[in-house]
Length: 222
Length: 296
Image (cartoon, rainbow over all chains, first blue to last red; front, side, top):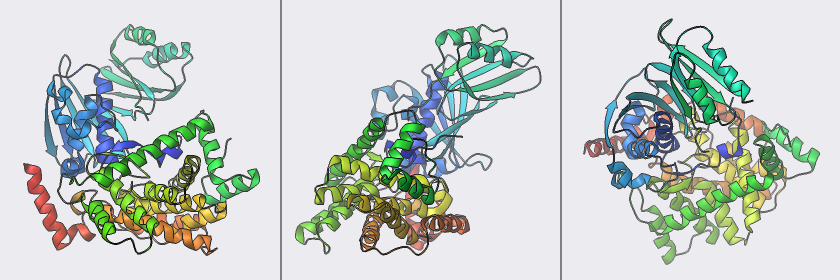
C-alpha cells in the first residue's frame, strides 16, 4: 500500500482546473512517454466516458498531449500546447467513446512509429493514475515506483532468472505481476522496484533467451 | 519520529506526550516516513506557499474567462466593489474573499495553482492563511506552521475517506478545505492544539451533506463562488473556538458522520452532474450550450 503523505492533501502544484481530468491526464501522458520511449510519429488519443464527456472543458485533451511530449503537471505550456513547437513535430488526433466496461476516466494511447503500441490507462483521482494495459497484456503501473516491464515466452523459470539478476544488485522488489495471452505463448511481467535499475541489468535481462522486450520505466516525479 | 496519527485522538495524545504543537508532530512524522529532514519538509511546504501566493497575485489582475466562457470575472467584480465601498466586515474579509476567488479563477483559466486538498477547492486554504498573514504581520515561518497544521487535518480526514467529490460530495473537497483553513487560522492566532482541532471540527460539522453537482461537469458552477463562501466559513469557526466554544461531538465522530453522509448521498449528487444544480432548467440549458461549443 502507498505510504500516505502530508503532500497528498497539499499539492501538486499544477495547472488547473481538475486534478483527475487535467493533472491526471498529464501524468498518463508522461507514463505513456516513459513506456514507449521513442518519439511516436503519430498518436491517437481515445478518450472514454467522463474523459470524453467533460474532458474538453477540463483541458484533458491538452494534458494528455503535453504529458506525452514530456511536460510536467505544472508546466505553463499545457494551456497553449497546440501552438508549441514540440506539438507541431508529431501527428495526433482524438476519438471520443462511451464504454461502460472502462473506468470513468480512461484513455488509450494508440502510438505509431518504429514500433506500434497501445497503452491504456485510467486517472483514478487526485492526480493518481494507473496503466492497466499495454497491447494485449494487463499491467499494474502507477508511476510511484520504478518499474521493469518484460514481454517473454511463457515457460518455466523465467521469473526466477529475472529476479536473480535483480537480487544480485541488492534491489528490493516491491511487487510483481504476471499475465499471459495463452499457455506457452507470450507473457508479461511487471516488477515494481524500490530503487533505480542500472542499465547493465536491463541488458542482462534482455539477453535472457526468449525475452522479447524489456522496458525500464522511470517513476513519475511527485 | 514514528507517529501513528490516523485519528484526532491519537494526534492529541502524541502532542501531549511529547509536549509539542500539531505541526511539529506532523513535520517529524513526514520526515521519518519519507526519510528526509524536517527542514526538507518545511522547504517543500514553503514551495507550495509561494505557488499559492503567485496564483493570488496573478488571479487578482486577470479578467480572462474560462474555456466555457461561464466564469472568470468575479474577482474583478469584487475588487471593483471594494474600491467603491469597503467590505462590511473589514480588511480581512475583503482579502479572504478576493484571494479565494482569485485562486479558483486561476484554476479554471488553466493557470498554476496548488491542489489543497483538491484543485476544485484550491482557493480556500491559501485565502485564509495568506490574508491573515498579511493582516496580522505574520512571519514566513508561521505561515509554514499554519499550512502544516492545515495539512495535518486533511491527512487525518483522508485516512477515512478519499478527497474526491465522486466519493463524498463537496464535503470532501471545499468542506475539508474549510476545516483545514480553520485549523490553520487558529494556529496562526496562537490557539492550543485542542482549539485547532476544535476549529476544524466546527467547520466540518457545518458542511455535512454538501453535494457536488457541477453544471456541465466543469469546476466552475458552483465551485468558484463556493471557495469564497467556505473560506469565510473557516473564520466563523475560528472566532467561535477562540471564544472557547466547543464542539459537543468529538472530532473523530464528526468524521464518521461525514463518511456516513457521503455513503448515503445519492450518486446523482457526487460529481456525476446528474442532479442538483446541474439538472436545473438553467443548468441543463448551459450544458446544452457547452455541448455545441465542444463540437467546434
